[in-house]
Image 1 (cartoon, rainbow, N blue to C red):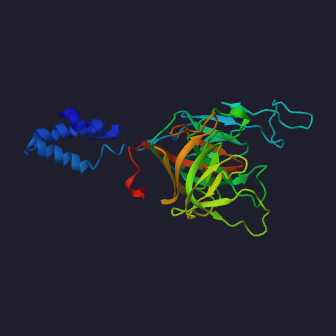
Image 2 (image 1 turned 60 degrees about the horizontal axis):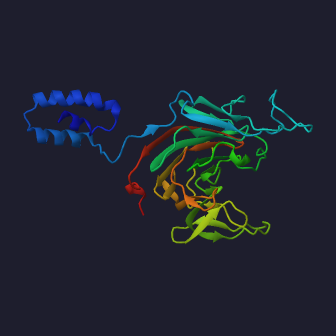
Amino acid sequence: MLKWMQSVFIDRRIASAARHFMLRVMFTSRLPLGRLVFALCASCNLSAAEPAWRPLFNGHDLSNWTTWIATPQATVDLPGEPKNARGEYTQPIGSGRDPLGVFTVTTVDGRRAIHISGQVFGELRTRESFTNYRLKLQFKWGEKKWPPRDKPGTARDSGLLYYVHAAPGAEHRTWARSIELQIQEHDVGDLYAVGSQISVRSSPLPPPPGSKPSAESLYQYNPQGEWHLFSQVPGSSGRCVKQPDNEKPTGEWNTVELVCFGGDSIHIVNGKVVMRLHGPLRIDGPQPIPVTAGPLILQSEGAELYYRDVEIRPITEIPAEYKE
């Protein structure tokens, strides 16, 4: 009976204390055992269907993550790295090497956070692979921008890649095949199908005034729109714009959530659903096949930013607050 009662405590950190509390109450209470167990479970307000959030960033180091860094811009000072006759670097920095400190841990606004300098393009990848989960994190832009994205009008950029299904640097790609929840100034929550395919209910957007003609149409999420397939292949659009815009001003902390269950995923920005997606496919084989599991990646893409409170928990259904 005690073992069964302990199972209602999902958070392992309180299980031991709860067990001792139960024993003490059982031996001092006059309530029947059945009523006592019911009262204790109700007071805990815990459900086996909602496991505790688990941090992916431990607040101390990046031991739960791996790094891969692309070929630096020629403007980067990195002695010892091979260059060609034009002074250009000739190969990626690669996996497990971070001589420039692109990915570090720091304190910002009194809290521990992942610091991404943005100086060189690269990835911070979880060591684990995930399926059927709910992820949440907070991010905040820093001040610095780097070539080739350092122009005054260029938006600060990063991204959360999920359903990652390629090794770092595979196929000479900077970004591993995946689905991207875009984290970019003014565009947080957009989709990029990075060497993959996925469907979104959406509607075409008119081209911006003065823009050059393009064979690729731009689409925006529309829950009443038609299903469109997005993929980064010639003649197709790999991007879908979120709707609505629920991003906070640059310099403030934003909360991003990602729900992935079966073939469905949901992009959530500051508590608001901005896109629903369906049917992710990998397209690196003879035929497209579903992909519903993979590591997560945080991008370094030319802009300084911070991530904190990176947490995940498994789910057995779409959370009630995000069901249609």
